[in-house]
Image 1 (cartoon, one colour):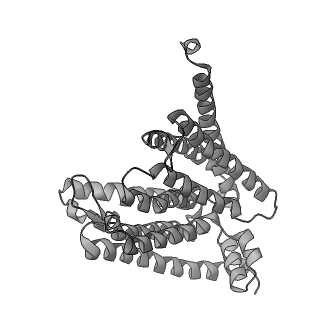
Image 2 (cartoon, helix red, strand yellow):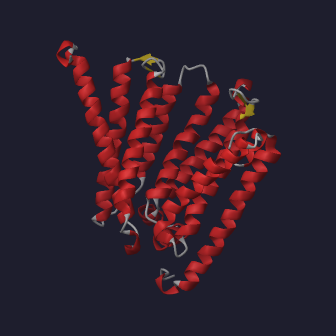
Image 3 (tube, helix red, strand yellow):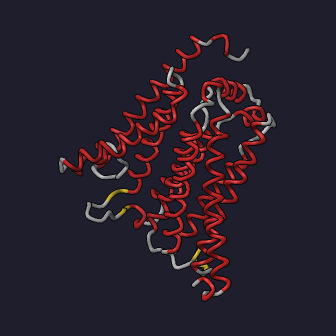
Length: 333
């Protein structure tokens, strides 16, 4: 049957399959290298996680491809064809995964490395996603998409990147002393991702507040309309809480499992708790645990802000306690 198909179609299929394989292998290797960059105690037990990350990345890529194909092969309004969109989407992620492996290998070889490549990837990721969202007649989707895409990368880096308080303290000290080039070589990628996430969320809030009235309301099937500004603000607070949860565990005795414990905590907060609320037929209170934007600011924002503030206090407390116990490891003033 393959010999009855046009040669171009066969070539696109083969290239797509190869791209999927590259994404799975490269992201798995990238996850392993990310965990190898931390303290010696974190160097074990990363192989299974790396394989899981590779498989999850492939699954997410598949979902992204399907979503892209729903746009009838258009990118920012330019019709480039469904096969081309599928192929470009796959190899977009494959090539960036290879770049990520190269950058991590440089870091393992003790070569100075700044986060510009990761920043460029986040920008390219958002721009590519916006191109697929363009022209769908859903301006709210285009408004919320940048924060959602960067949040996915932020969650990923928070889980797989090695947690090293010493490197983080050295980075913060260098930044406070004005040695920004030195700080850039030490800054963890989860912190870079969080800064970008905060920036795109703030930008979305400004656009929602000053843009067309149609941007202000998101129609949720089967539910009452939600305010996109509340969704963005609640998303920022909930994701901030998620990042801080990982850092809380990274500063404790369970630091080697901080990413895994954090991911399990997110599963409970975003999966189990909402399931209980839905089972109790109290969907109006989902805003307490999900950034749905429903229930108004009292339900949506107060809950998210309280959780983020509590996690921030716990991180500050654990940070001080950690350096009291490990004063000998603190960088010299």
